[in-house]
Structures are given as structure tokens and as C-alpha cells.
Image (cartoon, rainbow, N blue to C red):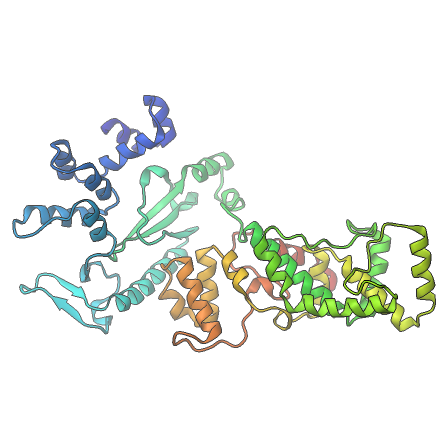
Length: 462
């Protein structure tokens, strides 16, 4: 046990230690977890005074919780919880002590209860405590960022920070701050750490700026980027149907420069999962587009009113038939057909969507509202907190900064629906869905914003 802990302090990874001793990495982590316990607990475990289940739960306890548990063991009038009861005790089955508050006690407006001797005091209202504690955590996070730390990572409530999974790294080399919050309200700030992978990348790159250029994860997941692409595509092409002169110029541009779609093929609107498929099928922009397409099919005399216009198989007789029909139509009707064809062959997720949408000043709020699929695909806690700040204000967001993503999304939806005592927010668009699109973080990985930044100088108005 001592050898493994010493090697970790020397900078060795869990995998390195496992290879050195010829054991599994899981066993190394167990050894390290036992080594991180207070000496009195380790000694009691060796003497078999503590069973395996109890000591396993104790490895998830903070040092303060371990000391409290030993105090209970030493008090003949108290019962120290063990096994499953210990797990309940660690994860919320106990009153919240005033000792764990990051905020000044006189700022707490609720009732504080004390024991008969006045030695220990507790917050009577746990919800009120967590509101004040979360606000203090948010302030601590902001202070770290203002002090120049590259990133502050808020761990999920109850998630313990295991130092052997990380490498000590100073601020100047890109080290991060990890904030761990226990279910009993204790907050621990671990300054100057990187995962082994990030630390190795920083050493290989040589400079902090190079590490920052390779973020650990993009701002949007693949399914969320797909969701954003398809809904923006649907809104832009529906809006373009009212601007045939613009569509004509776009057709000419496609004919001159070529396109991945101009052979000619329709945009397949391929979704990555059923959630995105169902969301797109029910959106307002697709319904408006379908209505206009049926009108164009009627102009062309198509017997299939639910069919498509572009993307034929190149049959010569069919081409002659369409040509003859178009010769009989007035210029305005031909322009309606042309505009519809341009819309059907407009590539989703492309730079041209950003150019066209910004030129037409597309208001996404007219065509789209946040739905179940959007919130199901939102998984990033930092971004969920930023969105909550937009609809509920910074005070509400800071008061829930350490809550799970699911909880923060629920509060955001309560504001949008005006439910559970929240004042309804009538109109709200995430930055991702606006024209022009905006990012929530500096991590990068948002293709839509990058595309607009690339072509924006071409569309600067005098």
C-alpha cells in the first residue's frame, strides 16, 4: 500500500503502477483508496474491526466525514453507522452542519438549530442552505477564473476527487481547479490538477496555449450539432421560399462553382437518431415547407401531391415532360418552382446556411421553440447553467451551479412554461439557434459559429 502511494506522489500513473507490480489497475485503485483513509480506520480494518462493505463506503468519505465517523465510534453513547446505513449517512442522511458553509452564517435567513450544549449547530432548511451554498460556490468559481485559472470543473454532487487519477500541474502550465461537493454540504477545492492525458499533452506541446487549442471535448455533442444543423436548415429554406430573387442568384452561384448536392440531388435531412427525426418532423418550418411544395407539385401537374420536386433519375422523357409543363407557366410560377428546387437542394450544416440565414435575417423564434429533443440532447452542465442564467437570471443560475444537469434543465423549462412558481419567459432562443450563431464557451467545437466567422467578411453591409 505504501509503495503504491509513494509512486503516485512521484508522478506514476495507475496503469504504470499496475504494470510494475503485475496487478490490475482496479486493484491499484483499491489500494490507493485504502491508503487515503485515516490511519485509525486502516488499523481497525487490519484488525477486522471494520467489515469490507463499511470500509468501501468510507473510501468515498471526505477526511472530515472520516473524523466524524471515528468520533461516533469512540463515543459509547453514539452508534457509528455501518454498511448500508453508513452510505445513507454519507450521502444525505444527516443534518447539514453550519461548519460546512462557504457563506457567512448571518447571511442565512432561515432557522439554525443547536444541540443542548451549544457546541454544534445545523441548518434547519436544507433547500435554503443549498441555495446559499451554491451561490457561494459560483462566487468561488468566478474568483478562480478571474485569478487566471484556465478552467474550474464542478464535480457532480457526491463525486469524490481521486488525486491518483490526476497529475499536479501549476496554473501557469494550464492546471485546473476541481471543486468537489459532498451530499452533506462540504466543499473541497483542489487547485492545480490535470488528468494524466491532459498533462501528457501539455508536456508534449510545450506551451499552455497549445493545450488550450486542443479542448478536452467540443461544445456540442454530435447529436446536438446534428439537431442544430437540421433545424437551422429547415428554418432557412422555409424563409427563402418568400425570396425567389435571392434563390435565383443562389442557383447561379451553384451552377458556376458546383456543390456537393448539385448533380442534382435533394438534401436527405439525415438524422442520427429517432429523437432528432421526430423533432424535425413536428417542427413548424417543415410544415410550412410541405405546404409550399404541394403547391409547386400542383403547378407541375404531378399526380403525387406528397412527392418531391428535385432529384429525378435523369429519364429523358420525364425531362421533356417537365420542360413542356414549364413552357406553359408564367415567369412568376417558374420562379416559384425554381425557388423550391433550390430549397430542396440546399445542404444542411453548410456554410451557405449561415450566409443565407444571416442575409435574410431569419428569426428562428418564428420557426422553432425548444422542445423535448433539444433538452434531451443537452448534456453539458456548464452550458445548462449559462442557459438557466439567460432565462432565470444570474442569481438563480448561481444558486443552482452545483446541481445536476437534469435539475438545471428542469428549472429552465419551468421558466419557459411558467410552472412551479417561475415567472414565464415568453421568448428565448439559445445562442446556438440565433442568426448569427454564438458560442457559450471558449472551448470551440461549434462548427456553426466557425462557419459564419469564415464568411462574415463577405457580407459586411456598408
